[in-house]
Image (cartoon, rainbow, N blue to C red; front, side, top):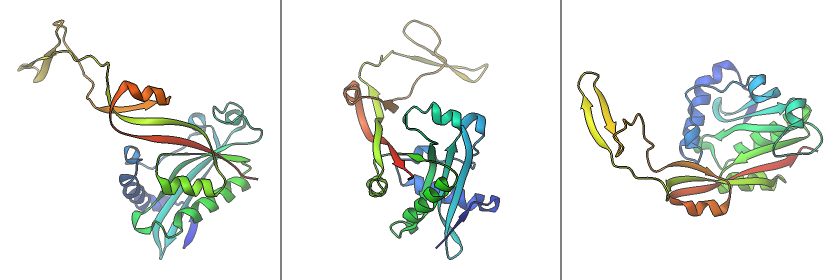
Length: 220
């Protein structure tokens, strides 16, 4: 296995591995067609670590992490600890290379790079995947925040009656509600919600849900 910095010519293989990994995980809503960029004014990163893992010359894993600027470290929502913070943005291993130590090797290399770049601690966001959570916990990470990701319908959601017609002039649907006001859009149910308290889950008819966790790991 070879772990090295990401290069521009890795782009297509990088996108392919992320798509394959995320499509089989709870991060399937975060598959993108473009490689992430991290402008400082938007992300608050003084430096970005971007690593890939290769086996026999083939890209099989990837990780991106950012080291906070002093301003972001001081205003961080989750951690009020002294020093410089950092955050793991993307972490994925090709399904065909999982359970072979690729993820642990990538994460270990990333943590070392963050430490060398001046980070004192790192925050890691994940969902309910047992393997990922066990990996972070074995490295000493502790949970500092959580919420729920819910696919469902609100129990108190209004159910208006719609009248459907076709405007043959514009070839658009002319939809009106019981008030005879034209409806320009409607929410499709079920849909995804972020729920911040366990009690809040009772407000939904739930099709599926999982816990989202944020971990804190000291780099000293």
